[in-house]
Length: 429
Image 1: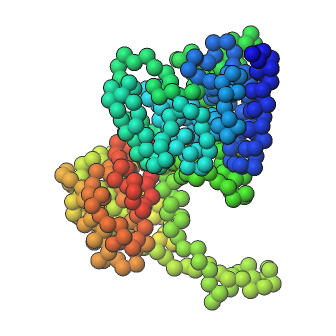
Image 2: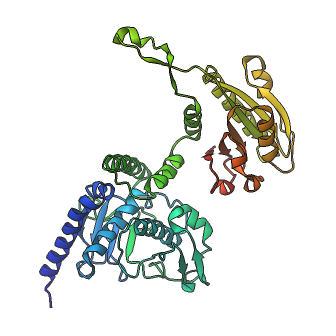
C-alpha cells in the first residue's frame, strides 16, 4: 500500500517526465505547456468519475492515484488533451450551448486530432476508432448516434450535428467514461477554480476578465504555431482549426479585404527596373502593374433585407475605390438569373447605391458562373454575397477557372461550401 506522500511524489514525477518528453515530441504542445499551472486537486474539486481537469485560467489539477495508473504515453496524451482545451478555446467558446453536449464535442474534437497525430490517450475517454468514426451510446441521446470524420470538424460543427441530450439524464462524464472536467470559471455554474480572493475562496470571472484571457490564449496559440513551424512539426489539423478560430474573431470586412489583397498579382518583372535600383546601386526588378478582373455577385432573392443590401453595396463601392489601381470590379445582381451587370466606377456609384431588391424566389449561382465564364475570359475571382441557400452543391467548381469567395449573411449557412475549393467569410452584422 503506497502512502499518500509517496503517491503524490510519483504523480509529480510522471507529469514532469511527460513535460520533458513533450519538448522533443511536439513543439506546439510543449510551448503551451509552459503556461500551465499544475497542482494536486483539492478535496471535492474533482467528481468521482474524473481524474484530471483544467480551468479557463490555465490551472491543471489532478488526482494522484488516477495519474499513477496511466502509462507514460497515456500521460503525454492526457496532458496534450488538457492543453488542447485551452489551445482551442473550448472553455471560452461555449456561449449559451448546453454544457454536457458541448463538453462531449470538445473532448471529441481534441481526441480525434491527437489520435491523428499519433498520441495515446487514457482508456475510457470519448475516442473515435481508427477510421475516425465514433458511435455514442444510447444513454446520452436516447439512441445510438454515429459521428464520422471527427478530426475534420470543429466542436461547433459537431454540436450542430448531434441531437439534444436525453432529458432527465444526470450525467457529467459524457456517458462514455470521460475522465476530465472543463472548468469555465463562470459564476453561473459556480465553477471557481480555487485561485480567487485573498481568503482562497473560488470566484467566477467577469466578462472583461474572460475577454482578456481569450486574447492571451489567442496570442499564445499563434506563438506556439510559429514556434512549431520553425521546427517543421505542426500538429496535423491544428492550422486549419486555428484558421477557423481566427475567422470567428476577425472582423468580416477585414477578412474579406485580406482575401481581395491576396488576389492582386505580386509578380515581378525584369523588363523594367525598380526605382530603388538607384539607391541600391544595383538592378532590381519592378512589380507588374496589370489589373485583374473581379466580379461581385449579390443575391437579391429576398433573403437579404434592403437596409442590409444598401450597406453591402456601400462596402463593395469602398473596396472598388481602394483597389481601383489594381482591380477592374464589376457587380452582378441576381436571383435565379442575372438581372444587372454594372461596372463599379465613379460615374455610376450613386446609381449602384440605390439598387433595390428585385427578386423574391430562389437563388442560383450557376447562371452567374456561366455568365462570367462566357463574358469575361480573364476573370480572376468571383465574390458572392448570399445566404448560402442556393444550388452550390450541384456546381462543379472545376468547370470555372476563377477563385470563388462567398460572403454569407448573418442568418445564412456555409454548409454547401464545406467540401468546395473556395473561401468563406461569415458576416457578423
